[in-house]
Length: 167
Image 1 (cartoon, rainbow, N blue to C red):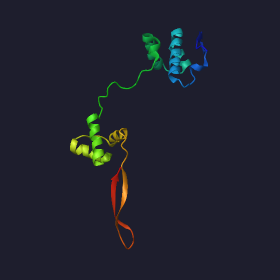
Image 2 (spheres, rainbow, N blue to C red):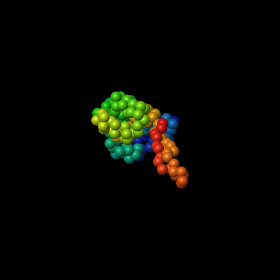
Image 3 (cartoon, helix red, strand yellow):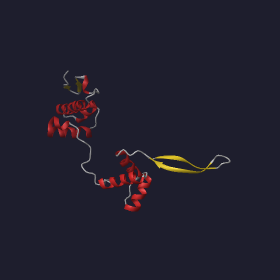
Image 4 (cartoon, rainbow, N blue to C red):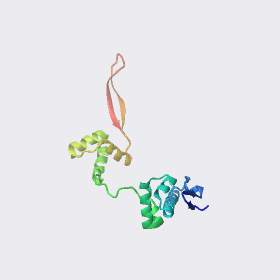
């Protein structure tokens, strides 16, 4: 089925029901949808009509129309939103290695690692950042195991409990 656009006066109709349907191939569907926008705008030169018919805003139509004019169909492909650089990036390889060494050699949790980094390395990192590093490097959370302590003979209650961090 062809996806053609018929424009007559103020009435616009779309042939091809698959233009707006969701499918497994979402990128192709998105490309078709944008192509419909720019084709309709090219035929009518009425941004208000296109936006009403397609359910989009003018600020959405404008950049796609400009990209289509510059690059053709290649301009309708969505670009990555990933930043090119992160000037405020907190972690580098050296800091990540330092966190992992504190975890592996001294069996410290995120709060203790945070304290050690501040005390000995003058490095301020949030516990959330430390957790992200540990999780990314598949370091499981430490489990606090309760070991029996000194028992009172008469009542059988534990007077002193010993805690040990294990992995």
